Length: 368
Length: 196
Image (cartoon, rainbow over all chains, first blue to last red; front, top):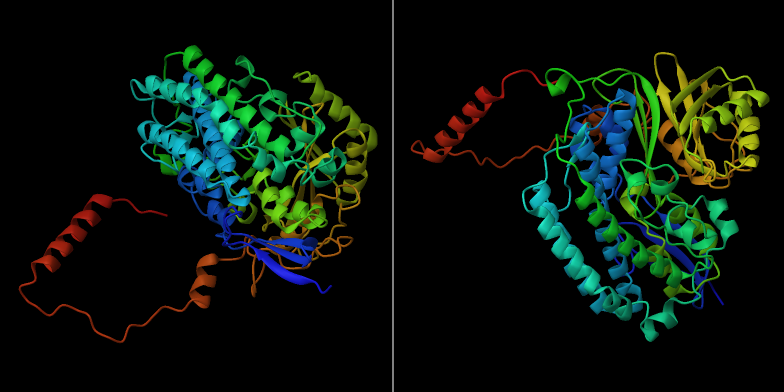
């Protein structure tokens, strides 16, 4: 039969963000596929070179829309490494609370995204409703719902508002009480299982070939390869959490791990709220006016664990008020570009959206 | 997974047994950087991959305009011995060619393509490094080079619009206009200082 070209995205219920997957299909089997990025390219890396170190805080959250806080964290960590700056103890704990809330929100969004390709929109409505509650908490803490610009070089912008721990705990209790319901709606639901079980496999050998990190890697390799565990930043070495893994990576096991990570994040936030000391939350990275702050010469790569894998900023400073070069390692780069090109062929059309969803592909961080 | 400085020392010994790096920087206990000659890059990366640094985390370049050099950067990671290794090599800016690392790290394919697109570095050995990836129909020097001026590009590419219809307000009693002017003046007086 003749091959036919199909587009998955940029407008498609199974596509996350403005990227397009070009599929060449024979019947409903994909023969060749590739990702066409570039629809969200706004020259972030060039823009960062042209902005001051402080100003960049307002630009970097835009690199990944569903989970902006990891950008701020990676940028701040890198700059602090170059500056040799010690962040106040309380700021570390606040950062962890923010990052874990963001992880829950990103996982919920991605789990809800499963509703698109499988046709279970109830799942999406539930997940987005709960994500909205997290955005409410973010609004109380930072004043903004999506782009918080809260984690800055030297700590966090402002201390937590009074009584926020009650709100956070109430939300966590609520989410935890409905965890089983969530599982029943999605991955325990027989009709969803039939769609996601044994599809879009990712063998361990392929992981190393692609350079996939995060849930994709952990679901396949079966080892706790999580940057929070392997090389802890902030105070992740002082909280107890497990890294869920598996050795059989199909769409279902990856989503299962996502949900298990959600439980771990809940536990981390609770520990943070308990262990968090009082004190200052921010130190100034320089003297005088913030427009004149400089960062010493140096090269640094600062990775953090995002909901999709290793997310890093490569930063070069030449001692000036602006970064000399900032490179963003998007967590979804390997699975988004090489993964779609090499490992999608051979699967069915309707599984393409499952790969995009379960591997966590965020198009703005591929484009930058 | 021991988290001590010994890991970095181990890496240093490992690298120095293979080649003589031009420079070594220890960033922190999880990261070390080696500046090497462009000829040593592939030998070193192959050794590192065989020693367990199987993940290529990042590949890009830095433009040093004053020295007339490009600095190609490879960042590799080993999950069992958590040390990030930066391997950096400076190549000539007028003739930016370095062999692809595709046979060592298959994941480098798109990184090299992007690096060619944004810096103009050529990677012979990578079958499609010259194809366009993100910038559709780009017609200027690669944009992340330091001598590329986005402002000038945008002025040239998108000429300023000229409006033929006249929408200016002719009413003499227009209080909105005076209010707006006052507001502008106040904002200008508050701003102060010169923004670079």
